[in-house]
Length: 106
Image (cartoon, rainbow, N blue to C red; front, side, top):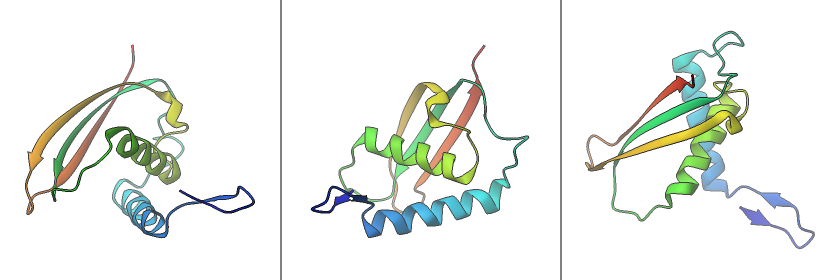
């Protein structure tokens, strides 16, 4: 996040490019509608395999993922995610992936 002298916040250009690409891919692949949007508290399981050896901040990764899901129309509000299980699948340069499973809380 970049902040001007007046206190206005702007996303880092590389993050904005990544976010917009991910949101576009989510919309194209999942074709979310108001009827399919998550509107109730849920549990999320994430399985993540790194594609490079960069150090990453898990909380920032989750925050970015939640914002993308919200912007794409998959979830009404990211505050509906009430619990998370993160599985780290290691490193694989050719098969990096992130799988997300969302379940309604009972």
